[in-house]
Image (cartoon, rainbow, N blue to C red; front, side, top):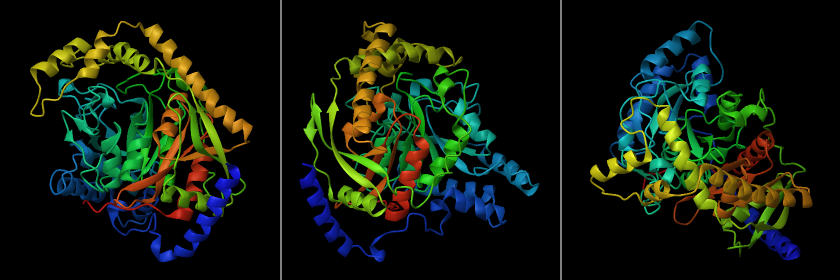
Length: 504
């Protein structure tokens, strides 16, 4: 299999390298428009007195009005922050006085609608049942962003209850925000529960956004919408103040248009949170931009899953865009190693997730005094009496509420399955002396990294024949984010495959 793979790669590489020219590769960062400028570009404009935060907020707010609420009507932004302009004015004043706080000073950020914010914004997980009293405190990572000078521009739409209302519902729909759309092709899925955060960044509504992932909810939207999505090692970033499914898998993460912008966010999001014990062993004080370089792939050994074996396993047939991506990796000095990955048995996984939410969501309700609901049953009753114009069901919520599994049983089930996936990934990393794994944006790799709690980065690899983004998916061992950032950055600079949407 290795020899066949190598011959195929060499033949394909020759064909691709002949056909590729500089004019066919779109620049990942070149854009004079503010809506697609990177954080570094925006910060430079502000430092040179060519742009103010107020002007940037006004520009992006108008763009949201034109494209999210009208025109293609993406429905990716669920609510705008009425205080954003006042905050921008205060931050402009700080900069003028020589008190810029860092790279994110005056930069607008959108937050998924499950992050607590101590302001006038709702935190509803997309549910009409949660509209009422705003949160009293910022989520830990939101406070980190504010302290760094970022401006919370608003909240993004999401799959309601992180896609735990009803599995029959379309991705990107919530009762509060309606049906979110993919900016590249509105008839296609936005994928995953962080759908609005990815769609909004792709559409140029903000350079940065926060999302959350339990199982693919950052990786999949990043892939579908053609942006950079980073899911960290579970415990690297705090989950306190975030509407939960289960802390055994939940994590916040970032959506951006460039790898460097994501690294800049990680610089300020990191930190030990006494309210989230999982962060107690996480590394801190890391500069996630320090290893970013064009030659970071030189000498790296990267595994490529050619097949998954075990329960529901299957061989993989990579698309042309992914094969082109592997050619790029080789050009940058990486060695691509074909591997067969064992897929563990996942019996008990879904009940374990459901059991986690059954007990952890009511704990979150208790932290939010003034909410219209305080229990799963109250949520279900609300949905029955307030079906909305779409009249969508709630089969998953009802099944979670009826589950007889205890919290300890649910936790034990998830922990056991997570350990199996850790072992499955670790054995391949060690067996082949790999620095990381790379895969097409297939559900197997995303699922494996999510269940193991291991870090992953999705980033654009091109466009398919249907006019939709494709992506590559780097993942690796715990706490290897600095190395993954570096490898992803090197690939990004060599490939330059970021494509802005045409709103078809």
